[in-house]
Length: 171
Image (cartoon, rainbow, N blue to C red; front, side, top):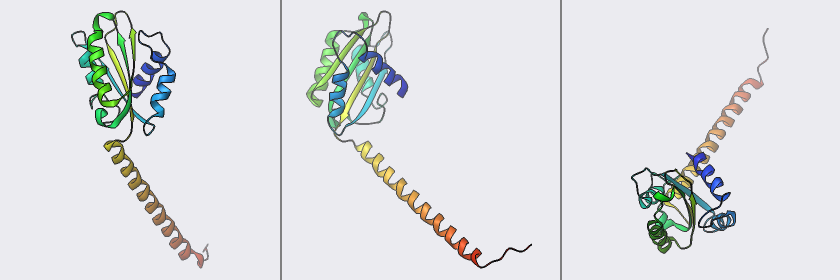
């Protein structure tokens, strides 16, 4: 799933878009906030509106790691791809405006791909995240446990060496 997101992003940044988003925009996005981001991705079906696909890409199920983008993001990028018949520009504009009013600046790109169902990639540059804070705390705890284990092993090794110091091998 992570590879799908990155491949989608690379293909999108390397193509001609109806609404332009490029590597410079991606760099600007990543330079803002805490320099952390999460990716959202969703593929739509034939009977699914583009608005629903956009929302799905921003939902906990669509995001790479769970966050609340409307509260925790400082900038966003949204790249939409699909056949023209699935891409209602009014729905796209409505969702981008809603996101922009909560997040701030939103970079957007639209790729027209004949006979392809809609796909949406959203990237959120984060200022902070409760989930990320939990992740950091878990990482700190894991490092502490690792150090404690290392110290115990070192102590056990020293005790074993002390016991063996005075013993001569018997043949």
